[in-house]
Each structure stands twice: as C-alpha cells, then as structure tokens.
Image (cartoon, rainbow, N blue to C red; front, side, top):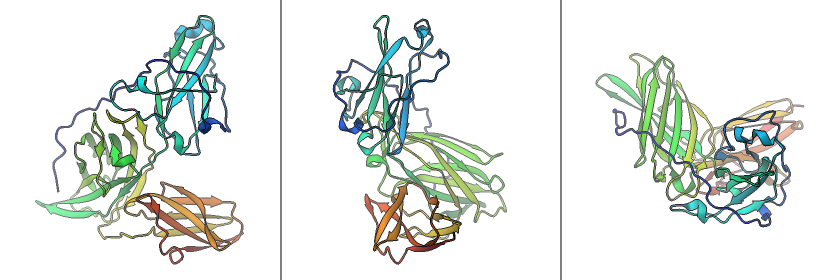
Length: 384
C-alpha cells in the first residue's frame, strides 16, 4: 500500500473545439422527427456582453430534455433582439484525428430561434451540435462553438475497507470503483470525499489507472478532500475490475473508525482526447457509505423497504461490477419494469393500498441478472 502522495502532479489543459466550415441544409432525421417539446423562445430582457456562445458540453439522461441557447453580445445591441435568425446543425459522426470538425457531415435541424429544447435518446449519445446566428440586416453569419451531448452515466462504488498499522499509525484503505464507462475509458474526473474530521487526520489517493496524474488537497479542519485526476492527451483505460484507485485515510490516535461515514461526490467525469470524437461528459451520482472492514459482498442487491400511506421507498446495497439497477414488480404472472438507473434508492407515491412483490436487479457486463429472481423478491404491504 502506498503511503506517499502521487508524484508528477500537473494541471491538465483540455482544448476547446471551434467550428470550421459550413453545413448543408437537409431534412431532419427520424431521431428529431417527433420532438414533443419544440422550440422555446428567448426571455432575455437585455443583451449580455459576453459574445456569442451557448451552453457547454453536457450530460442528459435518455428521455430527458436538454436546452441550448445562443447569447447575443454587445456588438449585436444596435440590431435588437429581433435582428437575427438562427440555424441549428447536428452530426453523429465518429470522426477522430486532427481537424475533426471539418470532417463532420452536418445535418440542418428545423429550428430558427435562439433557444431550443431537445429530447435526449440513446441514438443521440455523442451527437455534436452548433448554431449559426444570421444578422437580418447585413446577412453576416456567425457560428457558435460545437457542443457534444452524452446520455451515459457512471456508477460510483466504495468497496470494503482494509486496515494496516505502520509505525504506530493506523491507515484505512477504501477502494473506489467506477462502472458504466464507455469502452472502460475516461480522461479526467474530479472527486470530492468528505470524512469525519474528528476521526481522520489525512486523506490521500493512490491511483490504480496507468497514466493518471492528479492534483489533490485535504482540508483537515473540515474533513474535505478533493482530487482532480486526468490523462490529458489520450484517455486512460480502466481495468475489468473497474478499480480507479484507493483512498488511504490516516486515523487519529485513539479514534474509532468503524461505522464512520464517507460521502463521495464525483463532481465531473469526462471522456475526451485525440482519438475521441467530441467531449463526452458522464452523468454521476453521489455515494454515502459507512466504513466496514468486514466483507459484505453479495451477488444481488440487498434491499431495505419502507412503506407509508399509498407510498413506498426502497434502498439497496451496491453490487460489484453493476452498471445500473432496475426495480420491477410482479403482476399477471410476470415481472414488469418500474424504473432503472444508476442509483441505490427508489421512491414512489400514489400507490393503491395492497400487497405487492418487488425486486431490485443489477445489470452486469451488459446483461440483467435475473437469476433466483423470485426467491429474492420483497413483499410490500401498502396502507391506504
């Protein structure tokens, strides 16, 4: 186990991408043919003097809507808010190498306003989008930077802790895993871990991913630890065990660490680089666990259920290698899906009074584990 902080820490620089060339106007593809949200008009009261831009690369879950808006700059003020029209373009090309923007085949979208709202789908994962601002008086065309959207989320997991005593000091080591990465690749992530400042006097991180460097900081007075980890030019590949690294927590003399809570927030996780088409931002969720040095590994999620009037809540434990989880209920002789996602809890209200059988399943290596499904189901009695 390493006790020294990582060497060779340096800052990562991720280059912004600019639009090159123009796009040809063609019909919108089927992926955009049935948008149920349409176009949202701008509600700006005044100009923002920051130049023409719009929202950055973003994560949006499939089925949810993302918005993009062109912002007018000070140079546009004399023409007024109605002095422009807009064109929107997208591409799902997977082009890599140098000058990749000029190699995209761009498709024109049927929008002419400065703000649009689009429903995300799996087919749009990795799609590139940009807009053109057109001055009605002069005909001048100004292109915004390209942005990339992503609907892939990752699941964070803090594993079973191990303990070691060296030269009279006690160290608790907690594995940190990420599942759901595209091709097991990631180029940068920013993590925040909060520990009990009365129990631990220091936190360090030992990376398990080849090529990763980082910049970390622990604030002893608050128990907050932050680390920005990156491989700036090419993505790093995570092993099949999904291990990113290990947190090494130094225990204060005489402090009791068993049961102490750790709160992990993966603030950002990004996939970019020379061989990646675009800048993909993974969705993330926070994780909270209590330190336990006893192995509690289970093949299936262990479910805890709470019921209330016309409502219930399920919480469950993480499973090694799980990419996402689902909740299903039994009806008419078969299991029916309620929800799925990268979370460890599910709540529902407005449930009619009665008795129900539910189960939580894990998706591992791209397949749902339905083994022993009836035996591990949970029975809920919902009061009215």
